[in-house]
Image (cartoon, rainbow, N blue to C red; front, side):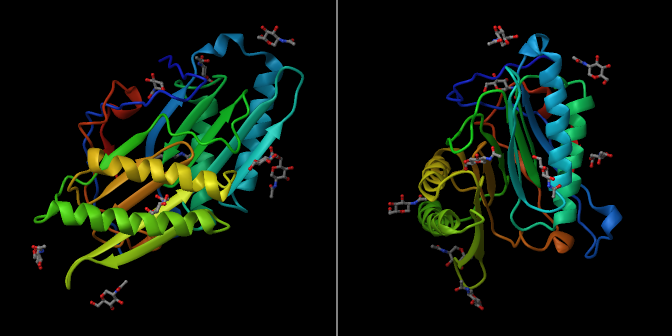
Length: 284
Ligand SMILES: *[C@@H]1O[C@H](CO)[C@@H](O)[C@H](O)[C@H]1NC(C)=O
Ligand SMILES: *[C@@H]1O[C@H](CO)[C@@H](O)[C@H](O)[C@H]1NC(C)=O
Ligand SMILES: *[C@@H]1O[C@H](CO)[C@@H](O)[C@H](O)[C@H]1NC(C)=O
Ligand SMILES: *[C@@H]1O[C@H](CO)[C@@H](O)[C@H](O)[C@H]1NC(C)=O
Ligand SMILES: *[C@@H]1O[C@H](CO)[C@@H](O)[C@H](O)[C@H]1NC(C)=O
Ligand SMILES: *[C@@H]1O[C@H](CO)[C@@H](O)[C@H](O)[C@H]1NC(C)=O
Ligand SMILES: *[C@@H]1O[C@H](CO)[C@@H](O)[C@H](O)[C@H]1NC(C)=O
Ligand SMILES: *[C@@H]1O[C@H](CO)[C@@H](O)[C@H](O)[C@H]1NC(C)=O
Ligand SMILES: *[C@@H]1O[C@H](CO)[C@@H](O)[C@H](O)[C@H]1NC(C)=O
């Protein structure tokens, strides 16, 4: 299916995902060959017919530099120069995952981009998994804050009492997490905060590393601003922009990739659209 992507990146994308994402309990230890990556969204430009063969060649070069670099780093951006066929590309893996999972995620993504029916030979594309996201374009986008399209998943459980004070608590915790991420070299941070004796809030924030600390702060602040509307009272949510993302839950969900039973996340009704990449059931 052909998808369009506006070059100004200003339109806030709304997803209507009819899918139900079901998380199964993970075994407490997962062998290396049992690692899985979880596809979330794909957004490709429609103007693939105007692709020149040199641009296509540059895409192939880009994808192979993605896969080779993903075994060494969690973030990578590159420019493949060409006469009227320059391509800019980057991938980012979640800051708390091992490189082997990053590599697998990027490999999975580039394969889908190059041979899948959705995007092959698109001039530009954005793609996200729970573990990594990729983006390429013929227009330079490094260092620029992009907050659209947005992708949202919410935990369907709600905090049981005092939503207002929870949202304030969430905002403050997210703010501290975001500030720490912006100031860190990796543009990544996690924090936890005790809501009560028995309840702990876990928060994660990450920007793509091409962003300056100030731009990272700007991007994350825009994500945090959306929390009261997107996620009022939700016990967990993941809001993903091209340039940054935030995630919070009332259980430990980061850092323990091999010992991490995620709970159910539903796409939020507020974020909907007809996205074929979202319209099938995913098993997670
Ligand atoms: C891609 O993004 C554009 C605008 O941001 C939107 O119109 C289109 O539906 C998106 N495609 C998918 C598959 O989400
Ligand atoms: C990363 O990609 C670049 C091309 O952009 C390539 O020259 C380099 O060898 C790659 N690095 C690794 C570790 O594969
Ligand atoms: C670059 O490619 C586009 C699309 O194929 C074409 O319209 C344009 O004239 C080309 N520009 C140059 C400088 O060759
Ligand atoms: C990509 O991930 C899906 C789902 O986890 C899996 O079925 C597929 O084999 C993977 N492909 C690659 C190339 O890793
Ligand atoms: C995508 O790639 C497959 C195989 O590589 C090819 O059969 C198919 O026609 C391509 N689709 C588009 C839209 O280019
Ligand atoms: C919310 O409920 C929990 C128990 O579920 C309780 O410990 C806590 O004090 C309550 N908080 C408020 C603000 O009512
Ligand atoms: C939260 O409470 C636990 C004990 O209930 C304590 O060990 C932990 O240090 C507290 N964490 C924070 C961030 O205050
Ligand atoms: C990667 O992004 C930075 C901006 O943060 C930019 O200065 C640099 O040129 C990019 N690297 C490549 C190889 O394009
Ligand atoms: C955190 O809060 C401070 C004070 O309200 C604000 O100036 C800053 O922009 C916030 N940072 C983020 C990333 O939201």
